[in-house]
Length: 66
Image (cartoon, rainbow, N blue to C red; front, side, top):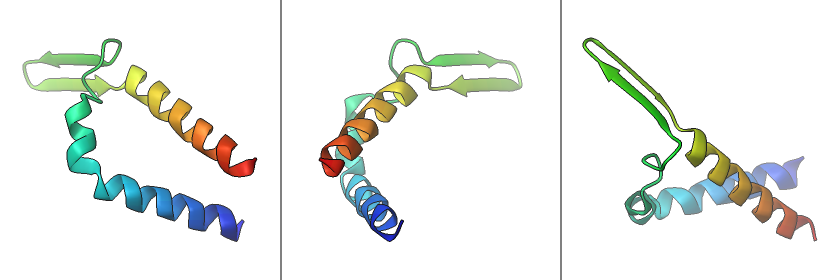
């Protein structure tokens, strides 16, 4: 459990350091992300972005376990 928490902390640190460059990739504005904007109401659900991030994290964790 300690190893997992340290690994997740390091991953978050690296992502935080590279966030200015990662934001240029267009995550959050992909086809499949749901965005509804109306008068006095806005709804945003990053479906495709969430799936891509989940795949990336799963791949990283799979490589770390090997």
